[in-house]
Amino acid sequence: MLAIISVVNFGMFHLSPGDATNRYFAPNTSKQQLAQMRNQLGLNKPLPIQFGIWCKKLIHGDLGYSWSQRRPVADVLTSAIPATLLLTVTALFINFLVGVGLGMVSGIHWESQWGKWIDTIALFVYSIPVFGLGLLSILLFSISLGWLPSGRMIALQTAGMSDWEKLIDGIRHLILPAAVLGLSTAAGTARYVRGNVQHIIQQNYVRAAYAKGLPVNHIYVRHILRNAMLPVITLLGLHLPYLLSGAFIIEVVFAWPGMGRITYDAVFAKDFPVVMAINLIAAILVISGNFLADLLYKWIDPRVEIT
View 1 (cartoon, rainbow, N blue to C red):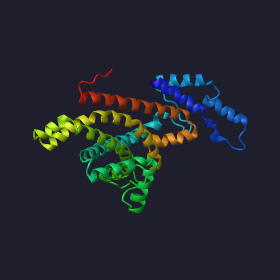
View 2: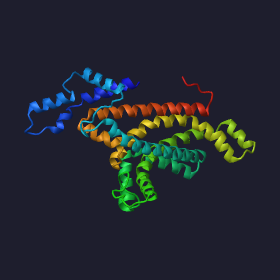
View 3: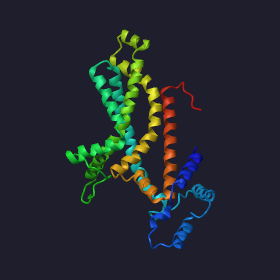
View 4: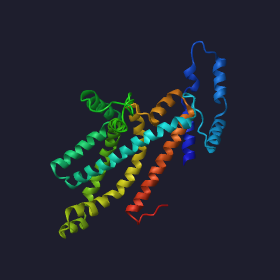
């Protein structure tokens, strides 16, 4: 799977017009100088040989050298991956907590007015592109109300701050991008959970539980939530690619120093080693996320077999 993804990413990158030497082009740049740059970067070699060289380095644990940042790709990613994971994991937690919670409430009270309002608001949020939701949140909470920072991971001036103040500052910078990313996916999760709960709540075993006089909270958790969660676990695993792609956009909107910002800069700089490394890591994270979802599925329902 990773080999196929790498071949596709390599082909798409080299099918796009231009190369890394375009950024150095100027009216007084000679063709000989550009040819020398291509030779130094290995761009004059046939594509299969370029791909073979990249694979050989990867096998030996070498992700290459960033052409635009002039340092090893591993160093470029060392600071970016934790920032993206922090943003994505927080957004996934918000997605699960808000999406499942609102879906349960909306599904149980699907005939009431406020149950329908929750579903309508979820549909409205789900319909807004993630970058539009990010810009709206900056306009409202940063510019108009001044409650939260509009960008970056930490404040520009942290000298003199205590550890506690730095922690609070980091949380304040995390709230907006994580909330936008998490809520944009939570809206879809809520509508999915609502549909499942509506179906389960009309099953005979749930009606029998009510007839027996079992506590309502027991029925909600043991009979409705547990059965409604089975397909949701799979859905959350499928949400991971969306969260990663959404994180790339959100990182650009909020100037978050993660893989998205680096990818954005690397694509425009035609920085092949960085783009290939980030695509490979993103593929590993997506595959790992789906495998984790399969394990959770089996943990909730032991009848499931993982092949």
